[in-house]
Image 1: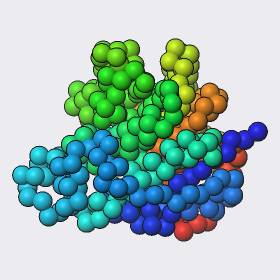
Image 2: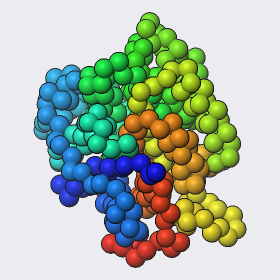
Image 3: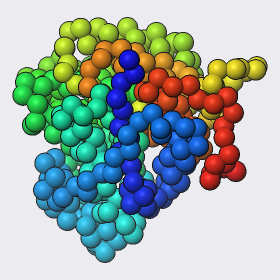
Image 4: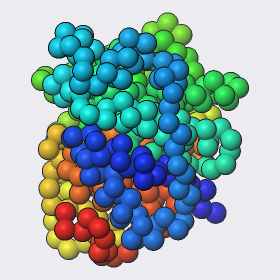
Length: 345
């Protein structure tokens, strides 16, 4: 029996997401693909709640939230203090963007708590670099931390496994739960001198009550689908057996993509691959490989929250998110990418 799946999205949310300069069209492209492939008919589309200031302050400091509210009107010194510079610069509509992204992941978590669905998805989420009082790496509000916190608050004796397959280490999430025994943070990423964010060593295992509740799996450039899946399946199964989570949160950043496919392929998922490399990634994964990883997690048959993350070639990221969504509902994609609003891209 296929799981019950909800995608958190709305036209208002799309407008907020489109204000993020680094990938303004990605989420609308994903939704358009899901509409025209027929995948939307197999899931529920739920409009997100908008996070309140108090929701954001469950993790972020009050001063940082105020700086987000001020958007471009803060002084240069304040922006520098809170990391609102460089790859996390301010822009008009920033605070609405933050409240929608956080609200969407909280809505997704609420759906799991209410047992309305088995899997909930927020492709606009997965902003795993944001710290309590510091923006970083295109991440302004840590919706991952807020969603996990919601699960811990509202499900007695819950234990949450956070799995991150973005090419960049989820430093903000690791830092938030480094001392927690209720959250296991597991990250598969690149670790190299000069590669952002420069954290994620295998030596970082958690501290205090959180000792042995953090596991980093640094991987080399050029890793392929088969290699990644072999490591992923072995590690995830071992962690799940030892930790016995009640819920899983999976950050599916798709900046791992280098979707060059040699020869003719016929898999319906592979028709959604494209000959390119994510501009910020150095792995050699395809949509097929990421879907395999999601299948491994689905087989746990635990309440699952699926989030986005990196993915800076908008068209490739949208195709991959569409393939991952199809995987959640056990549906094949059509053999050819259909004509849709963003087809020329």
